[in-house]
Image (cartoon, rainbow, N blue to C red; front, side):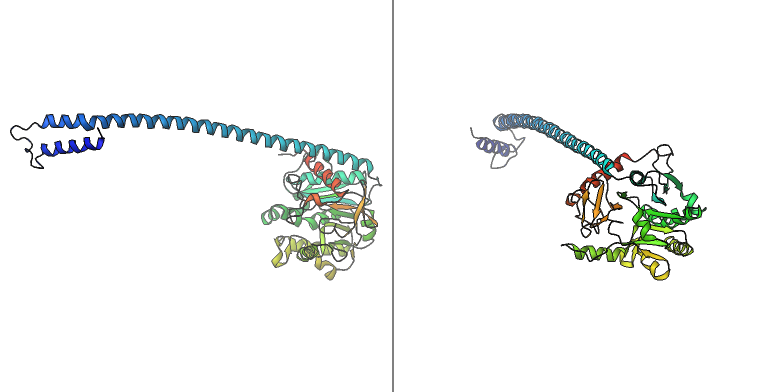
Length: 405
């Protein structure tokens, strides 16, 4: 029997029970509502309820099967994801291991091929923090490779290192600033503090009796003799290195020229100083400007400590412009300097390279040459520059050194 006919007959029975459609009213004499209700139940409701129970059971069973299937699918997806993640980690570890081996080989090659020069007639100094102390170690080791026995002093802006195993002599901000360390820390943070203390460190070392200094920013390697820097300084009080020596060339020439216009004429990464009265006056003036104004805001003419250097040749005498092509080579000028040569003997045109700058390079991003210029990648470096970059990265990774808590 079709369920719809059953529902119709049950509806007729129910209507007769309640007196509709001409039937006997509910409760009238001779009416049998119980029998009619039972017949309606037997004809329609019981089969419906039975079917509903079967449907509910089927639905629950289907849901159980679907749930089990989904759980199994999720398990397999998680397992596959976990395996893929482990594979990716293993591949990254393998790549990092290969890079470390390559970096160590690069260090060995450069160390074996570098010409040793005598003790430098100057003190090399730099500035670092706990975060960048590996850079200071890399710089100090490169100085020792080229000029064994030369004094290297690093101002550490926060936690002082344990002297054991250090590649340099460390001094603190309290040593350098005569009680003003807290004020400087309150006014600057991060790299801004490191950059701001450049003239303060140089003045401190002059007061301590160091007659001639070469300041080199910590993200650098000494790859050849520093004597040409001192020769260029001569008897002048301060020697400054320009970002550019010739108009830039290449497809990004305009961009690099604009970058230099924003960053300043001179690069703060290599500065030479003789202890003269004019040098001290210029350094004190520079220090007075950096205490309140060492920030990166190129729209307002601020590029940390660097833009102030543009004014020093204008306001002070006894300033030398160090124009050697190899005195301060970095990502902003290597395209114009004709870098060539062999490991251990790097050349910029006809000049030996003294200082190779890796400004903006991070060991954790080995494929990016500098974070300051988007898209400037390490793979664009010609040999043997690529060898030096790999060696520099290995020196960073190996040179954190023990730190005192």
